[in-house]
Each structure stands twice: as C-alpha cells, then as structure tokens.
Length: 515
Image (cartoon, rainbow, N blue to C red; front, side, top):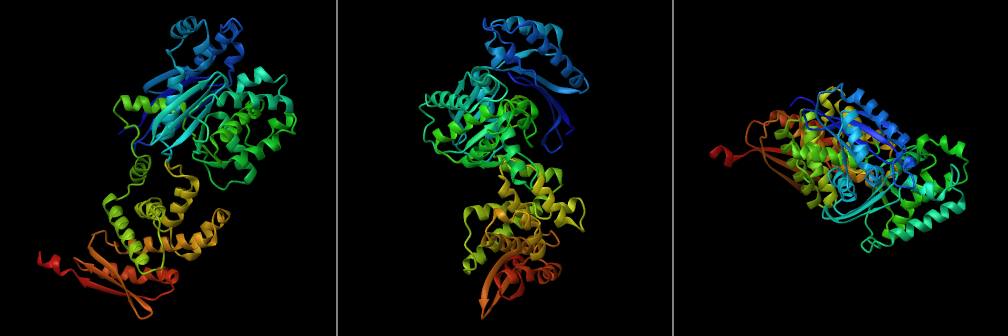
C-alpha cells in the first residue's frame, strides 16, 4: 500500500489546527504536518451572539494559511470542522458561505454530541481502557463521556471551556486566589448536575491542549525518562501539586514554566480547576492523557467510511500488527516462539518456581512475539535496538510502565544487560518485581533458542526434577542439533534465575515419524 495522506482542520474556540496524517504500508498513522494557530475566536463572539468582522477575518486568514500546506499534498480526503464558537454564532450561515466561497474548505459544524462522541471514539480506539470517563476541555465548551465495555453510555457538553472560564471569572492575565475559588465552585456545581457522574471510581481520560500541558509540566518536573505523552498516567495529588506550584507565580513566571505552552499560561489554572473537580466527583485518583482526541476521532471516521479501518477492534492487536509490518517480523516464527514461551512459563510455575498472573501471561505473549525486533536494524546489536525501539515507540493499548516491561522482556540478553536497561526506571519497580520480570525474560530467551532454525520442529516440552537438577525434555520431529547447540548456550540465563542446573534431553518424536 502506498502512503496516503489525509487532512483534518479543527476550528476550535481557542486554537485552530491543521493536521496532515500519513498512513503508511503497515497501516500505522503518523502526523506529517501539525500547524497550530492561537486564533481565540471565542474572544470575537459578541454579546449579540455574532462572530464579529475581525473574528471572521482571523478565521479566513488562518484557513488561507492552511491552504498553502494542504495544496502541497495529494490528499485522499480533507475534513474541516468547527466546534463551540462557530456552532453558537448567530451569523453561522454567513461564516459558512464565506469560507466555502473564499477557501478550499467546506466547514462541517459538529454538534455537541458529535464532539463528545469523536473524543470517546479516539480514546477507545487508541487506549487499553474498557470503562472510563473522558473529558475534553476546549476553549468554549467541555465534553464529558462515560463508557462501559467500550460502549458509550452517557455524554454531556458544558457551555464553558478554559477560555470562556477565564473571560467570565478572571480580570487579569492570571486568576487571583479568590477567582480560582469561584471557578472551582462554579465548575463543581455544573459537574454535579450529571447524575451519571458521581462515584463512578473509573479512570478519567483527558483529551486536548490543557491536559497535554498538565502532563508536560509534570514530566518536566519529575525528569521523566521516556519520550511520549499518549497514555501517560498521573494521580489527583500530582495535579494538586502542580496547582500548588503555579499559583504563587506571577504571569511572567508562568509563561516560562517548562512544559507549559506560552499561549496557555493564562488558561492553565482555570483548566486545572475542571480536572480537580472532576476527579473529586468521580472519586478517582487516576488521570490519564489521551494524545488522541477529536481530530483522531475524525480521521478514524474517515478511514472507517472508506473501509480502511475497523473501529473498536482490539487496540493492542492492531498495534502489534503494525509492528510486525514495520519491522518485517516473521509472524509464523514469532507465534511459534510465543507458544513455546508460554509453555515454558507454565512448566516453571508447575514446579513451584514462580506464580504468574494474567498480566504476566499477557506480557510474555507480546514480548515473545516481538523478541529481538531490533535485529531488523542491526543483528549484532539487536537487543539494544529492541529495548530502545519498544521503550520509546508509542504502542496504543499499553501504558508507559507496561511498555517498559515489554521492552525489558523482549530485549533480554543477560542479567547485566537487563539491569542496565532497568536502572533508569528503578523507582518504578520494587526489587522483587525486577527479579520476577528477569525470570520471564530468561524464559523468552530460552524459547527463542528452541526455534533457532525457524523450522518449528519442537513437538513437546516437559520439565522434570532429578535430585537438585532440573531436566528439560524436548521432543522434536526433525534433527535437533542446531536447536540443542543454542539451548546449551542460552540455558545458563534461566539456570541463574532458578538457581538450578538444567540438564537437556532431546529426543525423537516417534508419533511424528510413524505418521
């Protein structure tokens, strides 16, 4: 499949943004262009309900700028949408006609339901959450949804956003303590009108620029060692701590805060009030950023309409399909290694050396599938490339800690290499967790050596005890010399983790020979 390009234009109340997406051979979607203009159209919406002439000219000028980008590409589709400000403008029809006449674009006005639904769709198609609450704070509206079993249950659009809250309550660039208290009280009153929201005790998944900036501030504050924002997890206390740090600053200091966009310095504290109120009412400590939002929801809608994407499919399976295509993984061989690794893990557990839960089996399954994926770049340093690739690539459906565990397992070479990679993340894990995952890494490495020639000759594996030693009995359908050589070479890593010697017995599969 050749690379295809799609343009999405989002005319928001605070910002206008053009994103050109590229969909490559694997089906993976990447942002090719991302052009943001802080138009603040909400400020041009007058008391009579009209978007004034100056606001219309800002809109047209910005769209003319976007044309210079979109005309450069051979686009499969261009979608231009507007949200709260244009939706509420009394002179909406005049705006639509002018844009249609003077630009390349035709604006589609999103209803409050569509705006909420597209955010929910983006979240459920790019994160692992089955149940949750989504929030998207725009400039002039705030959309909330509640989904269960990945199906939308309830939604609501509030007629306030970060920019309109600032205009309504804040006299200067930065809110005073009293103004913040007024915003907090007002927002909490509004949110409490939703009978489906209180005490849900579900993760709050936040979309949009305000949430993105909160996460960026936190990552800078803690010296976060990973690249990427999508699926980043914070707590209610983390957000409270950020507010505590920002409140004493004057506006000049706010504009210089690492991770905070200068154009959001006057909006961040009003937005934080919304997050704090929501977390309190939902009664949850979990706050997660979805980097995928309304624009991604629109793209998914376009691709679905063109039969290029199935919505609400298994998010993680899709991510690993993309990995398989991007790095030319031999699927047959990887699936064989996966089954062998799971079998070995079961045998180790049956002998009482470990206790695996469903999460462990989940991690083994996927880590074995992408084991040593970095060999695609260089076979000699494949393990090193594997860790870097998996640790730093956004994998929809995996939270950041899970991604690091996957990278540690799939890159397992030996104990010292594992420990060096884990060292940066040692505050994320207890020592017993690291030992637990080190054992899983050694199991996956041994499973890989049992498929050294990629012939799938292993029929059965058993693990028995013989005095103080363990005996690994491997039944093969064809000559096993190459496999035995590799297992002899690699079994020491599992021996160290189990603190037992492992004797090897390779034998002929009589049933296979007689068939």
